[in-house]
Length: 340
Image (cartoon, rainbow, N blue to C red; front, side, top):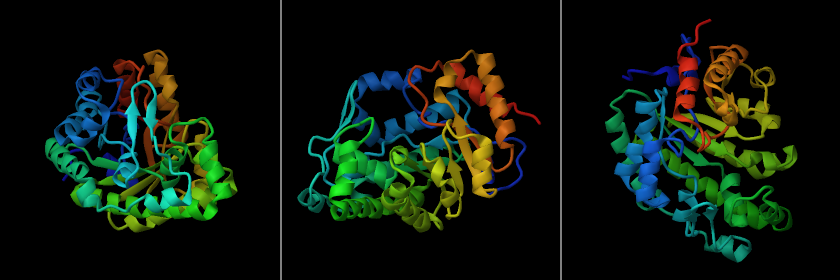
C-alpha cells in the first residue's frame, strides 16, 4: 500500500483532492547533487550502476516533494542493447557513429534478451523500489519506436531529422522493418520493467511532431499502439507525444491510461479531444525561469484550466538544466497547495 497513491488514483479516474504532480526529467541536471555525480561518473555509467541510478531516481522525491519517481535511465539503452553503438558526448548529446541507413544495417540490428542485456535496469528498479519503501509509485519509460528510429538513422539529434524521414520515404520496407524491431524489443523491455516493479510506464514520442498527421499514423502511432496494447495488462500506460496534438483523439481511443500534452496545446483543446481520459501536462519548462510568485500563479491556473480530476500536473517537456531548484519546488508546491 502506497503512502501516496495520487498518481495511480488519477490514472484510474478516481476522485482526488488535488492532482498528482511530477516533472519529466525531474532526476536530472538542475539538481546540484545530480551534478556532483555527473562530474564523477560518465552518463552511461550512471545508467548502468543500479546504486547510482537509484540515488538519482530518489533525489527529486526527497528534495522536491514530487508525487512519483521516474527511474533514471535513457531511451537509447534499447538501441545499445540491439547492437547499435550509442555514445553520449558532453556538450553535444547522443551520437551514434554507425547510423542505420540501409537494409544491410537493418539486418544487423539484433533483438536481444532484454533480461540479460538490460539486467542493470531491472536491478535498478528493484533497488529503487526498496529505497522508496512505498512512499510514491515508480514510473519506467521508453522512447517511442519512431523517436528511437530518428536517432538510429540520423546518428544524432536534429532540428528536422531529415535523414530519418528520407529513409522512411525512400526505403519504406527497411524503415518499417526497423521500426517493428524497435517495437518488439520495447514491448519486452517494458514488460520486464513492470515485472521488476514499476507501477506505471510512459512512452515518450519526443519527435512525433516532426511528422505530418498521415505520416504519424504510418511511422509512429501504429507502433506505439502495439506497445500500449501489449502493456495494458501489465502496468498503467501514459503516452506523451511532443507536438502531436493532431493525434490526441486517436491516442484517447487506445488503451492508454493517460495522454501527455505539451505547452503548445491548450487544456480546452486537449479536453475536447480525449473524451474524459486522464491528461498530463503541460507547463512550459522555460516558464520555470519566471519569478516564483508567477510560477505559482500560472501553475494553479493550469490546474483550473485542466480541472482537478482526470489530470496529472507536469511540464510540457523535460525540465531544463538551468532551472533553479527553488523554482522547481515552487511549481510542485503550487500544485500540492491547490484548493478549489
